[in-house]
Length: 151
Image (tube, rainbow, N blue to C red; front, side, top):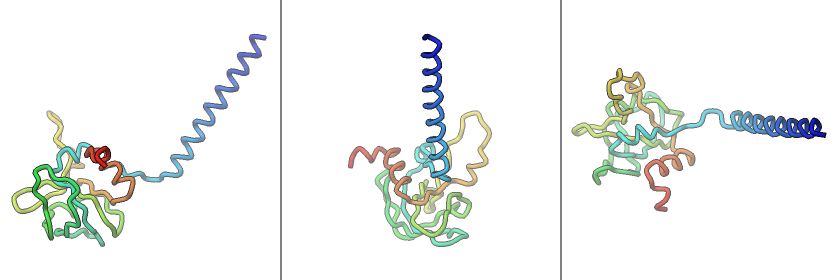
């Protein structure tokens, strides 16, 4: 009697485990390359702007469509020069992009990751990320900036 109960419990556990692995596999196949917004990059950024990018190589000047967040109340507007936009990663074709920026005098740079105290410079610091502005990216950005709760 006890032996039969153990076998039933094992069979149920195996069925649940197999179902869990099947669901995880399905999710992995369904979402090919998710875009994850970097909280560390946003911590460094002074401005989060939306702009339209239409072709590669990326331009050195962009037209600011809107400013989603500003650390100092100043808002970049019109055409601005972004020194390292051509070196950034994340371009996925023509469309609207979220570009985290830092200001350097009269020009801007795509924000990189913060320095790691005591560590070596990171190679990705030379290639900061920009994000195609999809619904998922907007949700992540709003969550990271704390804007989701205020809506």
